Length: 51
Image (cartoon, rainbow, N blue to C red; front, side, top):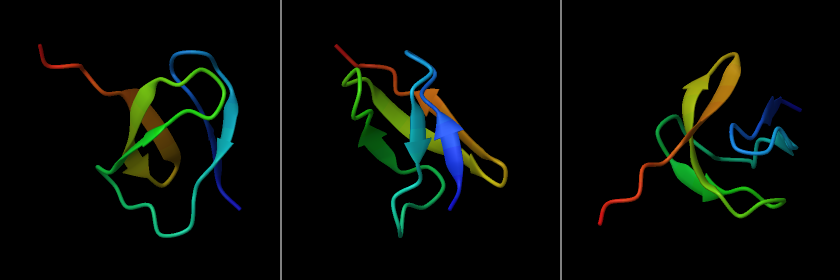
């Protein structure tokens, strides 16, 4: 199982099955919107909020 850190809080997140590069999700610890920037090795980036 692949694991990466939330860029906002450094919580270790197991990649959900079926999550593809570029798809967004919410960090289960801090609630930040993050996206999978790179699948191998897995890297999350913060999603910029558009106002």
